[in-house]
Amino acid sequence: PYTVARMSEAILRDGVPGKVLEVGTGSGYQTAILAHLTNQVFSIERIKALQDQARVRLKLLERYNVRLRHADGWQGWSAQGPFDAILVAAAPDVIPPRLLEQLAEGGRMVIPVGPQGGAQRLLMIRREEGVLHEQVLEAASFVPLINGAVT
Image: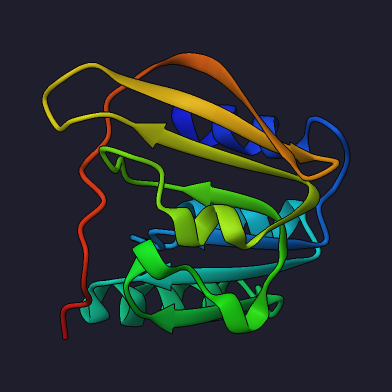
């Protein structure tokens, strides 16, 4: 719960984002929180069974401002971008360029970066006047962001 709160707080710091991309739906826990706190959530999950379970939970919670997609999170969801906020719930070794491309002007991305089992950092990346600004929020430990989708 602390990490979910910390990441949510970071994307809400400068106001409520209109469109949020979440990479890593998982159980749908953070998705439901984002749906409550923001206007519209687009969430990607690479594991179909997890996405299906999250869909059921979100329906039970009556969270109708969420769109789910079974896809590779490394690629983001360019057809729905740009996004005012991007929250990534798994750690790549490097920040995926496709996600940076989908971050709107004035947007914020919260993403853990670093090797699995090694030193990871939770970063906040802001796009201001076309320039990306990176801030380390804290040390982190996340599962790896893996390429590809699994049915």
